[in-house]
Length: 339
Ligand code: P6P
Image (cartoon, rainbow, N blue to C red; front, side):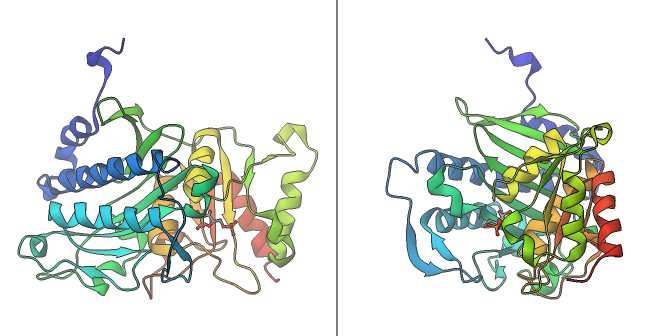
């Protein structure tokens, strides 16, 4: 029997820490709760996806030219609706929408924040019942009045107020940071409440997992090829050969590596020098979390959170994980950066 006394809910946690962001006057608390509400609704649909016809494609493509799955569209609609109703956010950039969604109603126009979101990342794995996720970044708006603008969204990661992800897996978790550490909350489905389950998350001191899609090996830069071979060398003292783990769902790969200790790499290739992952709503949020958990996130050369975005859906190569592992990969990228 769970005793109530040792459970801290998400709401209790963020209200408790509200004093840490006095400027927010509760708005950030309400915004994070709006995200949690939408996540619970999406979670319910994902868990019943196998039962109803919510698989399959809607016959449209998103801005990336990726076929949109019904759950992608559903998740996007839920997060947009929850954030618009909550009126703390004046604009959204979503992976599923080409342009900024600017909220122009009288309440949302007073919202102090803008959000970049991938409502359902890894959705190509849905029918395989693989864990998928929602990834979000929260910035304070730069504009003074009216609906949020593109300029409000094109901010570097160093300006982030908060960032996080929801992983819809064997359990549903919300993991986020507001710049004062990383905390994980597990959804208790019996009461529909996120409860603090992973306080103050940090990368483990000992890490020996590397995650990369080695199917693309021949297209990788020389430095990445050298790093993969480094991971595979026989050197028990440094725990090598490392263990290779790759799910193909960023939230699932990143979360496992945060818990167990490992590096995730999605590098650029000759054909796609900026890689596949999007800066605003995939790279920056996981970079913020990684840094707050004692790790590091770069594009192989530069800090991800320092990159000034030029467009909503721009991509960036991503090397993220424990500091030492990322720095070793960077060293080889410097020494062998040619393709
Ligand atoms: P690949 C999912 O489509 C995604 O955007 C990320 O979640 C994941 O890390 C990556 O693509 C996987 O890409 O090319 O290895 O299938």
